[in-house]
Image 1 (tube, rainbow, N blue to C red):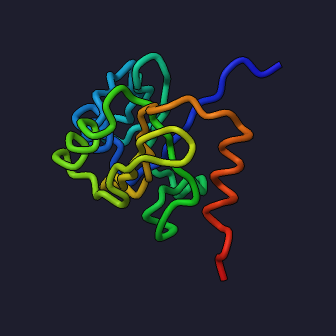
Image 2 (image 1 turned 30 degrees about the vertical axis):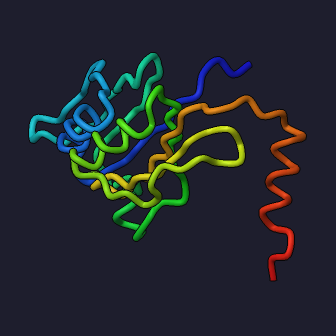
Length: 147
């Protein structure tokens, strides 16, 4: 039985990433395990009630962050009270806005940022309750007539 799932981010400079996530998203550090030289082996940050784990890269063990690969194949979605305010806060902290906030077919106002370490964050606020059937109808409508 699965009890929990945690995003685990690997970055080139975990100390800087932790400081960024605190400033950009209001994350709170739960704890950190650091080598004597300062490299972070493991840290846990609270994003509201939810834990996101983070570590530095460990190339000697095949552990690399997005910069090593030239991008990321995933994103973390933060469901928040005020997407516009958090987008501004993240941008002021150094995030790159990839998609400005706008109302989405699935019932959220959402935007996307990329942090300075290569991870993408989808930030969204609920604007309406949408049934799965209506969501599918709207999704299909987006692609109707596409070439």
